[in-house]
Image 1 (tube, one colour):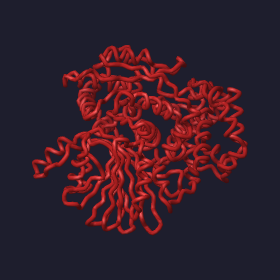
Image 2 (cartoon, helix red, strand yellow):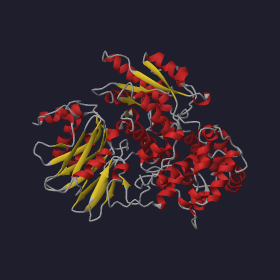
Image 3 (cartoon, helix red, strand yellow):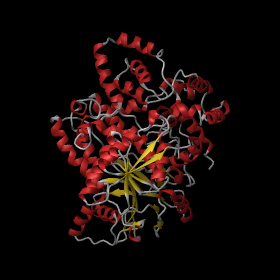
Length: 620
């Protein structure tokens, strides 16, 4: 796991500055390469995980000298691919996965991507064709951003902060991206909040040659649910894939641990990890749980029960994220506003776990892949509601829904009821978007001073789903928006800020493809996560499998009344909002409703704090 950057026509000093801004991602070494004939320069900062010797150093050049690669990520099946290449006559000078990838690309070009099992973002320079190729993994675990340069050049990096070192890039704020940030609390790909910087989307490639840029997609998740085996048959099919996904992600030359919350996702991963370690005759895995003083957020007892059952060496790490202190640092690592405060918890957990391990398996993506969010149940109920209740009655209920009060201390039942009724008369794409977006179109229009409400970005993506079945469409939408733009983004940024590598078995593309082919009726036969819970019953006691889900979220409502109260008063003022290009009146209303306990606007307020911090840090 590493940081990569590069540019066409860049000086060695500029390349060195880009690398310096990625040093946190790779504290074990850095490399720099420039084509002696001009054209492209690449840099790499290394976190040594596979082949700790200098043989794994990058940028790495092919033996013939034609290809040079800067690679971030892991290819879990590199040993099998290496054996195939050796049988075809290749010989290797290192035991690194990077060298295997380089040889595979030299032989097969982008067709090699279909053979890869892993998470990655890489840049490949072809000296003969003078062509730069950028590639991002299937589901977007590893980030990659790029920017056109004056004169037709191109620059790229793992993080926006490294690109900001490059002169000539348009750093002006993109107002449409700002609107989408307010909607989602992250900026959906391909935009960033800088008008001249774009994200390469998951499963996509980009080529640059002679000033011309082409892009394409080489993989996309497809939730189309055409298969309907029995539940037992489906679990029999999925169990080997789950085991393979975990086993593959234990490949490392450093110690690998596991984040364990006590929920189904991480508990299944930890149980399979312990099973694999026993089969290999290896010591029990190390597991880590974050604990909270607030009982409503604390899962230490559940995690301890799982750890005892699987026999892991378990460590509890008290949450001390210090939101106010970490805010500016968090924004720098993202390079743009990012409004999900769970990022602070991941940073805190990663920093503490890094004292013990270099790599950690996590249960992230279980909700998106297996259908775990309450909104999926709401979407299925909404379809029945629309069939049974005439539209005029649903419209009247939507109007009355605004009278429903809600808690500002993290209890979500009344809020969900209000949101369900408020969206009852909307078409399915707009309804789903209303549940997952934060500032709605009318609020964004008021905040930004727009003459008309802007579109809902998530609704546009929902309409492109290959399936009209609601559960298919909801999960497909999340796999292409919320997952890479939110969950994977904060997982990478916050763990790599402290040089910890996170690996996600539940995002093994073989598993995602298999689940996506199973019918929605089967995936939700017994409510949320039917398939994963059925698999979990083969690994864990029923008391663990059936316990209610808490989720890994900070008590933001509590923080706003305590640690963050002074920061809100200091930074969210009329003059600062005007500098941000936002209207003051709607913000003042949000603050008053939050203070009075009439609405839970805590995430919206945090998102505005993050936006203010980003704007204030643009000169750095």
